[in-house]
Length: 328
Image (cartoon, rainbow, N blue to C red):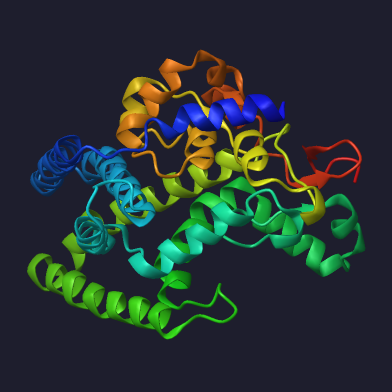
């Protein structure tokens, strides 16, 4: 398998060159529908709030696509120019409510430690082993069960993470001044940007136009974070047995989505390829996959199959798979 992984890695490396024209096209084709949908939401207020909320779903999808662009900028893969990546990432961070430099650092740690049992806690859903869960006192078991409940993760955890936890760089044990500066500057920019929107729209219109987009986008983002690494036959290893390329390929899923959903999610469902070579821009992931069909059979997951992963919450070190709470 190691030889295959090296072959896959060499193949993926051929697709990591950014294309500025395609990058600009992606920004334009995301911004235009987002603006149109936002205007449609405003006009729909005279028709029905339900129509407004319905339109908020594809608008949130565009916001999610903006997040993927910011994500690529953080990897330095969207544009060839570091300056262009950083400027674009920082501008988009207002729409994604995600501080650029802090998230870039945290996400780099995620890639450097993904599927490593001894280095958990960076950019993924918290996961305990069966043994760790059994050793917890009853109250902490209940807390973990609540946290791992899909409804809690999507409806409560997502908004809390994006709206509250990202306001302070507390995930890193020793955040440098750059991290605090990034987050606090972003917080001030958000106050100015969303404060202006609040003043222009008024609190009622702001609540039904802006907040649903942010909430829906957060829920979508959390679900993607979940299915990218939380599936039955994922891979976890202790540090002494952990290998970055093996963990990247076998510990990440290939979320085979319908074309329209793949567009909204910026191809991030091809997550095994992304982790194997994080410098591939999202607009080149599909061509990388198509050029080597073997990659399509690795950890492939449909929407229906992904729904079946919802009860999985514990890593069983003996069976070497993710299991549910049942029987534990």
